[in-house]
Length: 403
Ligand code: PLP
Image (cartoon, rainbow, N blue to C red; front, side, top):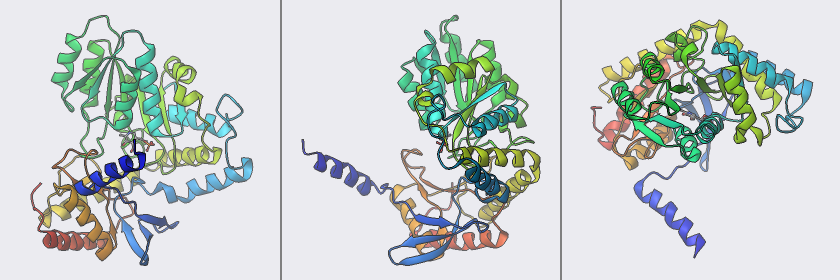
């Protein structure tokens, strides 16, 4: 086989479809988020970031940065090993206690990313529990899908957020088979929110465990930032709550929280946990400071929701095709891959506005979009400049005005 030719053909296929990914090279500056610098071959340019998952700007919060500086000065850079082999730093343990408390759970377990947390936990449960059937929402994130797939457990896909369909599938499964329902709270591309209570009701009725990915909700929903499960008063009903430390918490890493026994089981059998070096202690210290800060500052969450609503209204008033959501995510429909990329390029090159295109396979073909994530730090003036730029790009590319 001509390996080089194979690789090149695959890449040229992506380019033909208009969904070859080009990463903007940026530098964020402390205290200036969402402003940043972009490095290009033609020189540097000032930009405003409108697509960050640092949803609350905590990646630049002074309390978080101080905690990280202090931890580096105290114990250095890396953790020095896996948790089992000299890499179990005090900051990891303190962060796990903080996470357990955030989700009113007995215990929590850290991973090097949210992806690994999902993949490892679902793979371990599905592979180890004899006869376990996994019921998975059709729009679950790739990390959950891959975890379920690699577990080799039988899987049933229920229509997105469709309780009746979930119940139908649960009812059809053998009554004594172990079962697990895997779903997310905020779905990051459409910005819609799962009916957690109703899913727990059905899961309990059929004696199924529940696994909830709160990656796009933790820090942002609930009076302490414990996610939509906290907001909806359902945290205590979930077998596992999974989250990331890399989005609203503003740092890096992932975790699962649950009962002492369940978490001890994943700690003891989860290969993506056991065989991977633990995160740098300063990362754990920063994440802990961020969670503690967010627990006490509900006004950031209120401001975040207000900003999202204000932007949604401004886009609607401007007649742009906003996909209406009930969360902080504000998608604007383009509907075609290469035009979506063109719109994103024009925004960046001509208006200094950074919103990366979202194309297949992240969203279905025909629903390509710009996914806008306003933060508490985006101003009205920045929003107005965004609308002017979007209008100019929509006119230039003759894009459709309805979602
Ligand atoms: N779960 C969902 C729903 C996500 O969107 C993502 C990442 O974007 C992850 C899990 C993975 O989290 P992390 O970025 O911490 O690996």
